Length: 422
Image 1 (tube, rainbow, N blue to C red):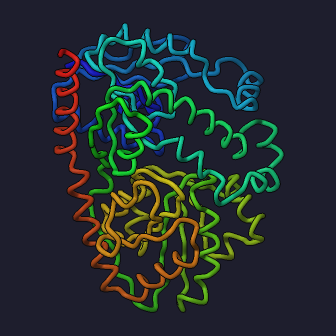
Image 2 (cartoon, rainbow, N blue to C red; image 1 turned 180 degrees about the horizontal axis):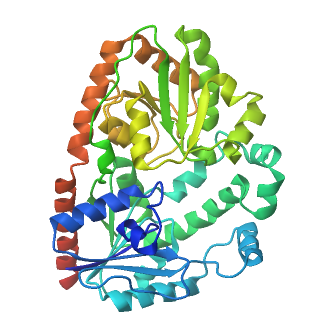
Image 3 (cartoon, rainbow, N blue to C red; image 1 turned 30 degrees about the horizontal axis):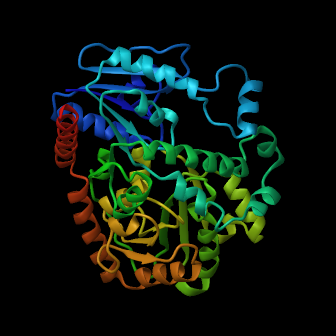
């Protein structure tokens, strides 16, 4: 079976390109490793890269096929592209067709609907599987539910507004990507997802498709459990893994931290992995709320490789997911895998990840008071925290078993190929 992936990450091909694995793209590398060890699939991995033309790296059953990243040219052209909030023109699909001609796959698997690679599907006679990651249609709908467009404009920096990389520009790109995503899904014959949320969304967005469930493989660094045992009067260590998008609920974290100080009765440290000091979302939230993250006990670590993130999780007491919309957030899954008790917003696919009161606590999105109450409850009830953490790890280990996931994926591929032949 010859399969071609279109994704955003070079996966295991990163070392062939002379770079480290991209932080935040480890899921594709983990699955590629598991598939390479557990099957005889001839796999091609294609991704945008700074190359002048389509290349083929590696021979035999495993190959990497980077295609030219858009926009190409100097800094001025790239700045104009960013400022206009444009998407890649459809002519870029020609590069994908060249990749397919080189790879000669039996099946194409497109990872994510947010990229233009999904547009290649209606040009192919071979079957195409569209894998749901997040859904820009829903993300764009709630993008400004916590921070308004006015907040992004008023508290954003002139530098980012001028170079087209502000959160305001990101919002308009999300809206345009959502329209393209809807087109991709309308024509999709086969889609795969991981939660009841994306299954129901696909019933409306991809009404002519067959839906398959397939979970994600987590990076191996998170499979080991070595939790710390906190004493009742000891500092509480809270952790969140979060990106700097406006819908990730960073303002809710700041408001919650302000409420926690008189509630807990003990000092706390809240670590945000994924946001660096001075990043747009950091500055916008501080200026809007008139607070200092440092004074609130919030520490920003920036983006870190898997080993360091796993180490931070194991040194923490509570994991908090603050997003206003998610599908199956890797950060939450990784926290569950190491056995952390979690507080997560009941948004999107998170109810498929954990059951309230069994593997964690679900709270409404954008509600700092309930978030503070849930954290306080876990901090004061060590038995409950241990029970939730243990159950979370058990469920995560079952859900993210690499061997089972590879088996499911191969079964999906075979079923699609069989349907195509009929």
